[in-house]
Length: 553
Image 1 (spheres, rainbow, N blue to C red):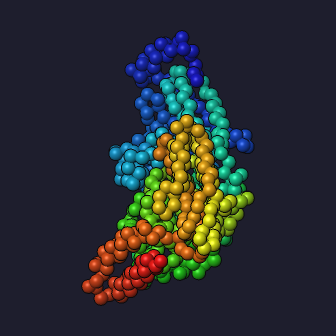
Image 2: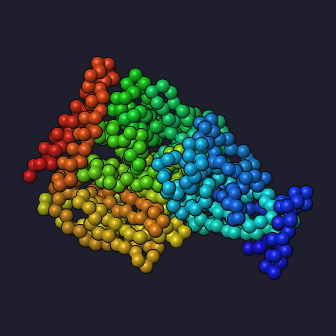
């Protein structure tokens, strides 16, 4: 749109702009632009994520004064805590969302993104949280306004022009859903966010942030090491949950956290921490699982970060891991996830942003089915039972004999046939699915391509099953957005869902990782090294027994 002169007068506008640039004393005052972001469902302003920048120079401007920003907000302020201010012109931290070598290690985004955008459908260099009804002072020129409100809403991008001396004006943008997953019983969550909650302003910041990203369950993790914890919470358990409408903050922990890997505890009632036995992770697992409703997860599986697979081959044998982060930093690690499924483990798929190292909360999401209105206890119960899928754009629905992900389908000896149903939804501004794929122990079971760029794909077929199998559905979009479900487990005659063909090779890789740790502690006589050796031997025995069972007729 054009504010001020029409197209016939643009040459005069250009001449005036040059004149003003050459004569600072003649520069016109900036124009105050009021921006209102309305939720189509309610008709009211809503917090959202935005980026305003010049179309000519690309410089990012910040409300309300229109200041140019050249560097995103560093990680350090998140350790201290971001304080929300009840001012419509208050904005949140500036988060980097596209690769910029100048900012790596200086408050920019984490290295594992590599060249990928933080959010596949967001093509702006940064984003920051706005109130939904704010002002910004901008000089004459050509401008670009981009707004994002979570992946269930269509992102909006508008270009506009301001003529020299133009009076203030208001722009209203209506944010519309392209899909309503809560109406289908699915509620979004992020299992991995770091921020202290020590005062009301911290809580208000996070609640407004959750609304801005339309993210319903934000798990705020106090993060530990051998000596201390960071991002401290006021407390844990139901009394310390904070909610507003259908948006909730729930305190958890990322601890233990060492060179053996990072553990997540969700829905906890107290911090489970034992510095005297810190590297005996099974001790923490038991303390977490003794708390009603608590879950234990393994972080960073998505990008094999933080020294994975050093610790996981050992921890997974304890049977205490409920979920794994298979999607993070725009990376989906289906290969290792499928390997562990091929050993017979049942692990829920989850996704976490790892903010403040991630660009924004909810950039990857764990959707959990509760079947109705949001109930926090039901959300965690659904996650534990595997009624989940992960995504950074498209939506999935996957069922076997009508049962959704996480379910077990029992068949008698000799097997039978199951009815498989998979469906994916996308949107041209979120990501159009290129394929919908169903995978089992031995690879692709069925795949549907999308040469016509339809926004919805569906697979329905009968599948013969002679021995126990796991089944998952996944998709990839034209902009590299992905989604992947937790399995449905089809069990024949009570037998495990491992792979006799692929399992032994996976076991070999686990034993090699265990041997590497054993070499580090082999000659040490301290209690820590001795305890680790005992635990590694238990894991070795577990894999030997598993291999022997797989070899039986």
